[in-house]
Length: 442
Image 1 (cartoon, rainbow, N blue to C red):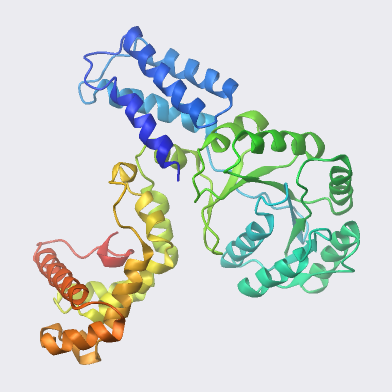
Image 2 (image 1 turned 120 degrees about the horizontal axis):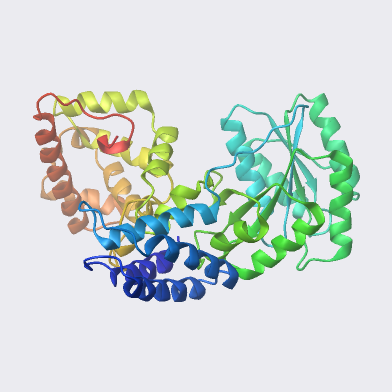
């Protein structure tokens, strides 16, 4: 996410690193580069102008502390201004005083509204709420059937109504939720290829009829300034409560994320980073600013781990590591835990400095599939005692997993190295194995 922007911003800030102090000239040079980078990322011109002015006014005349370099100080100032630009703090969904709460999802066609509805429903279920989907898009072919498919995937019922009148469907869904003791209605409305009066009038009628607790505008993060312009149009009509940025797993330049909150004045509440139901994150301005500046996002990574890792299994693994009895059975179990956290590329992207890694670095999820296939091709005895795996067994394992003997040898070497590392860690006096993340990371 935003890899190109991260690299270019880092390059711009590099020019001031090593300077003895922050002067008007070197600050101006750095700001000129940052301005160019932001404009290339399709950030709104007025937003760039205000952002640069704010950074420049804070940077000029600043004393450089002995503990940090001028470059680090500029990064700190840029980071703080990015946080301010993106909204300062996370703004959660506001729940109304009546049940059910109604969350109305709006946006242009193709922005990812129905997919987001499914992800939001799955997230709310994890928070022990009881959502109901309402299929109010009666215009797009198969839109209702798509929502039904999404509902089955996340085990949430869908209210279809008469499949003809969006306002009646919205009203009926609220009554259905009350009868079925569902505390949240997620209302999936119709989109259009462009903003038009008929579409907006219909959305206003739905809003006036069901009085939603929240209206969320879904914006395609890959469309740049088009997303900002459509957001403004929807805001003028509906005065929505928050923004959802989708498709940030693609080659989004980042302009929409950096512009849309400033232009509309409305908070970004969620970002979508993939197609799977669990690839939705609450938006935290400070964490996003850290990602954009290549600092990573360890907090979100840890939260992902805590929500997916089986704590009982983690404790058992810690005990095994202390006893130096880590086997391929344990390794396979840990692979399953890592896969639950999402694509490896996204996990790596949350690590500090990830954007600076070589472009050809293999973070392909298929690598895990191959490793899993190799381990599954071993007998249980071989998993527990890898030293039994001789030449003929390696050939059999390679054939069974659709890999090569070289692949099997490579995995065995990596496993031996891991065992040695675990052995060294277990000898560290006075330090227990940390809990909470796969492979002992806390």
